[in-house]
Image (cartoon, rainbow, N blue to C red; front, top):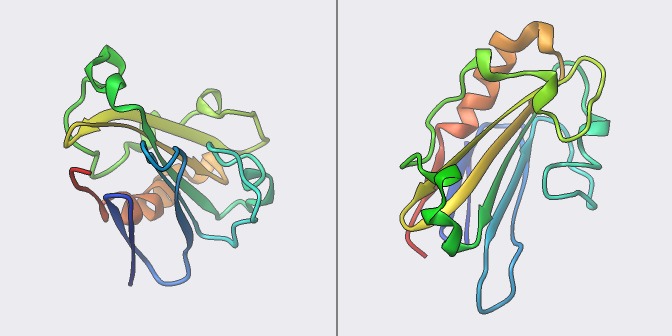
Length: 149
């Protein structure tokens, strides 16, 4: 296991995962963004993994954590308190993808933690194998920690 830390976010990564943690905001209002994958991440990626999902194989997983402006914390979308510790395989659907790709499925969860608003988004390479692949994703999801920042 390796740990990646920055911007008030830390994540424990299983061996073999590739990950990037960076800021989406300016220096006065940094907002954390995490991309973690079972495959090599390309240098150029959109916030929700465009540019990466196209490279996924059927056994691959992508986990994305995006922070939103702190003012969003009071919005109903972010009403769930605390980061999820696991995603439900039943929540994964091709309709949850930012861009539809044959065989893939995704899920997202919006929440607040320590006064911060987030979206957790995950994509699996083969919808038909969702139980196994979501278990792989959940190894990373369970290792995400969010501090006040």
